[in-house]
Image (cartoon, rainbow, N blue to C red; front, side, top):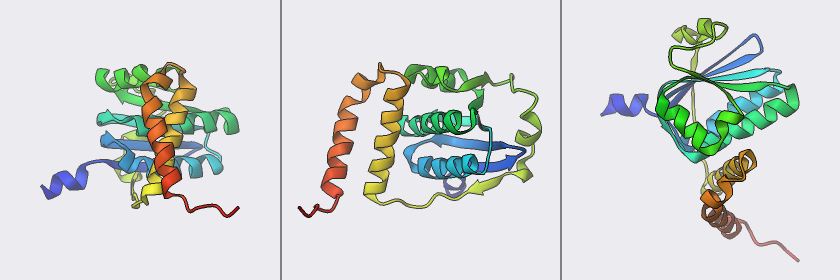
Length: 183
């Protein structure tokens, strides 16, 4: 059991020659979305032109995680004319991206079709560091989830009906958690 806990939902990261690399282990979920967002934004501020997310060991992704990826792709494109690549996708993980329209925003590569330019870094386990993910308050988590789902609606208007109730719930949750404003 300890080994499973140790390896589940982890991100390993590295930055090399204006490319940020992220290896996703197990599931991409809201639990590690904050860490991904923080790493990605910091890498963009440092001048990376691409973020490569290796999903070879990924068994699934939730909508918050995919919304954070969308947000990073929007930011990278705007700030650096850059792109997010998702590589080593299985048919299942590729399908998840397609369901929400992310396959139109990020460049994808299936397992076995890894672009040669990324292979040297992704094949060196010792060059990547485990990214720690800190606990968030309920309000921080709700705010991140709201932004992620708004990103997904920006990716594809077809996502609005899918996430309308989630957006309403998160906005209400944030409103309740926010301190009252003085008039």
